Image (cartoon, rainbow, N blue to C red):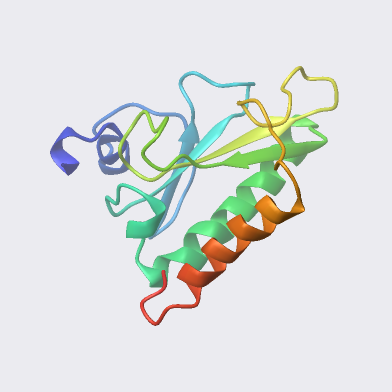
Length: 143
């Protein structure tokens, strides 16, 4: 897959990108189709498709850089905050784990998440969904 991966090409320096940061574990660059100017994509150097595939020893380094870039984007662009998001498979345009860091200001027109929000039918439904997730997390081979 790495030979066909657009983000692996950026990491290797074979594809053009406006880099904003790189270290031994990560590369961050401007999204070519930004939601707003300053929209950054952060990728691990190692090719992994989704969050579940990210080696445990890279979780802290990758998300430490996400935190730093979120702070930098806000300061550099005079934003009031940021939106940090990641797709896993569904809506993932490039099958290489990447985190979107988007500068935000009040009234910028972006409304919450990119999809409609809903509600649970009642407290019982919410409790049942929470219990199902907790049961998976409580198993010996939990993620």
